[in-house]
Image (cartoon, rainbow, N blue to C red; front, top):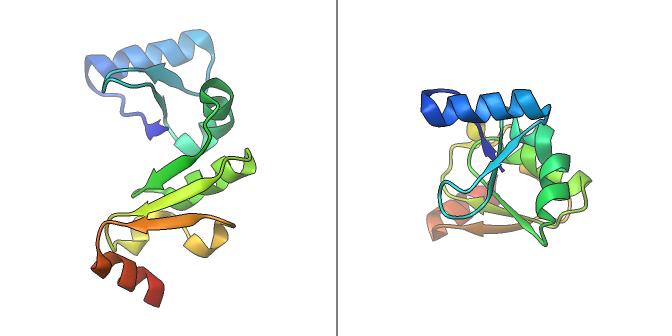
Length: 116
């Protein structure tokens, strides 16, 4: 579940597909695996869960909190991958994510989050 950017041919095709199908998101396999894309991914969580039926979701970086909350509301177990210490990019407070598990890309990142 990723943010949709509307520029370029890829973006224009995705925008047209969403409009024509009346869906909150589109699915493509551009990177070699299925990706659900939406303007605001957390608003398309129910659509993504219905289509993909995930066993678990891993959220990372930008807007992890609203996306994680939306996925948890759909009953999806959540892992938050902490890749940097840019707290303002999370879109909220990680403590709002009940029962989430956390992984970090480094000891520095893990220590910084554990202090917050």
